[in-house]
Length: 302
Image (cartoon, rainbow, N blue to C red; front, side, top):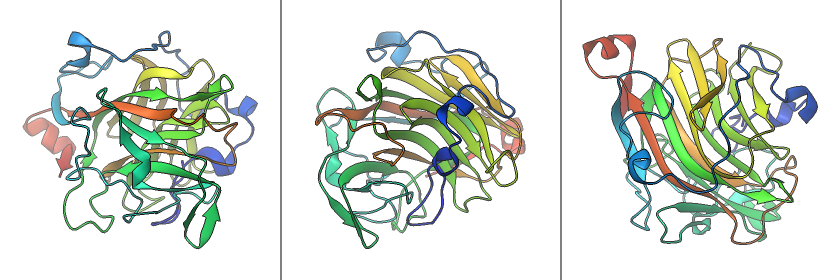
């Protein structure tokens, strides 16, 4: 997703899609390792209670652990809108939906659901045929208090990616953004494009359109654990505990915030049936601890 204007645009690779065939597992500065077999149920037991990132070695301290078992949104961290309350957005001009906080729901199973509905919505002076959902931790989106941003570390989320016609449905995404786009970069950790899941790093001056990464045609709809290990000078992506890519050019050192979204794009192959959503079980951030980590620039703030 490409972050384009402060109140109405990231969301990547879409405006510069070269066609799915040219993107599949062909990236700049990335690895093409395959992820482990698809999981169709969320992790449980000790795996869900891990005190370290899945598949990422190191000594880590959990600095953010957002779960959704309370059937209500933690508004001290999340905002269900894009630089505003009520109907807001879109993030990107290619979207066919605005965002409505009412499309963020809880079904009582320990997940939050980001729904897309076939209900017209109006935002930015335009009426769009669908309505989607967004959650952001941006502390500088006009809210008086709250939010979360971090510099370096491992971001991990367990989520259910929806399907339509056997493909990834809609435009689901997990990404991080800095306060000044595009200079601060954009990390699309998991993004549904043309029915396939992709991972990309966007920053000025690197690769065509400033876009490093690839797509993974083997990533099927269902439950997955997705991660980005953001370190000084690099971002490494993991799907289900296995490295799938790495970017080493133009990686920001500026703080970034977290965005979850489910919307519809001109690049989407179809819309999921009513009741099918991007489901999220948790979002976590790990960082190393101690004086050495502080000297390396690891930071986080609420």
